[in-house]
Image (spheres, rainbow, N blue to C red):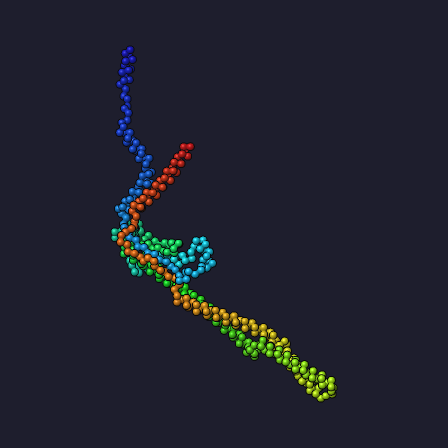
Length: 397
């Protein structure tokens, strides 16, 4: 009995650990939530906080000067060529080529070099008060021509509207005056480029036309010289005319011979021993000899080529001269047309809107930029969470 009481007493005196306090369990839950939320904080909250700090406290206001222009030709209303129709069929307008040439110039180092002749671009892009992540040079960049060129690209944007053919130039700067000056300088450089393209096109066209005219003149002179030498060598102007004249002479002689033979037959029938017969025979023989001589000029070789062969050579030389004269006339007309076209401008850079001087800053879009960062990070976080959930489910399965 005593042993049972002592055992119950020891059991009642055994320490029982109290349950965890409610405060300790709440702290554990907070720790667990923080552990589970660290991906969201790292992927979404931290970048959004950094973006908010930059755009609300650090980013400097920038002014935007905008201009609009078109590059067109005076004959832009004429029908397009077959190649132009083919390009339009796949959505490429032939008028875009000249505008894109100006766009490439605006984004080129040549444009930067021309701007530097008038303005100190490095000072404009690195004004005091500009935030270190926007101005030139940025903290991790050095001062160099390549760095200045890349810095200018951040402040200049040029676009093209294919439906209207209008190009838009947007220039940002830390002051309104700088933005307007840079935009105006780029537009003036584009106008000079178009003028150079006009001069180059006119010069090339005139050079080609003058070379073609010189070649045509040489061909015409050679053809004339060949024909003149042939005439001097053969001692007549036109073999065809000479052949025709010889044929006419032969016809007339044969008629005369026929008349004499008829007359002789008539006399011989009445007086066979008439002394007139010998005279008629002599005349007939003389006419026949003349006919044979004329035939020899036309068909037989007489110390060289026949008159027929000479006539063929003459026709070739005449045809060559006619073709050379036609080519010369065409080359002359082409040169006259090229000279007239050279006096007219082929391309125009026509301003629709001149560069404006903004009275307030419009960049950066602070709240919109913060929301864009938040939305982008949310998309990244969502994709990552879905990928992690899929991998975990696959591992458990």
